[in-house]
Image 1 (cartoon, rainbow, N blue to C red):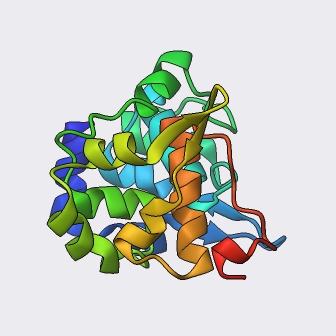
Image 2: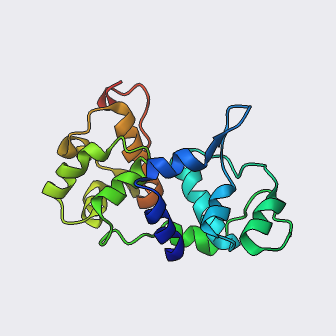
Amino acid sequence: LFRSLQALQENFDNVAQISKAYIVETGNGSRQLSSELFADLGIDNADHQSRFLRWFEDNCGVQGIEACAADELATATTGTAQHLPPAVNRSEEAVKEDTLPDYRHMAFADWLASVDPSGGVHGYLEACEDCFDNVAQIAQTYTVTVDGQKSLDTQLFEDLGIVEAEHRSLFTKWFARFCGTQDLPEPGTPHFGV
């Protein structure tokens, strides 16, 4: 995966550019990941493809890989025509690793990009840097256990100055996925500014 990181860093300035280049709107209104991503980055390992797909599904709302010829993808990445399955299957190990990032060494800017790949929450970078040592500290501080269930401590919103309902929802979803919190914002709750 580090080989892919280098290629991405050389060709793109931010996650939003990558998303714009490789997310395709289909005729029925769904969003799919373009198979060109794998060809452009030389990603022929199915496990690596599944990790990229999972990230795009979770962070950008894509629903699978663009249906353009999977055979073309196989030819482009391996040099020989071979049929790839229409949907990349995620190995259990890939899913397990993807859910366990090391937050002690993750840059705040990278964390905010994982919360919202479009860059909409990047404005909280300064507050994160001023108030915390690392992302792990944020995850530990605001993941609380109430009645045996992990929840997001909404004090996070006040501490970082998060007032927009959409931004609160993005952070809540991130905590649910990566910290195992069970609560999602209710659309009508006054706490979420709706």
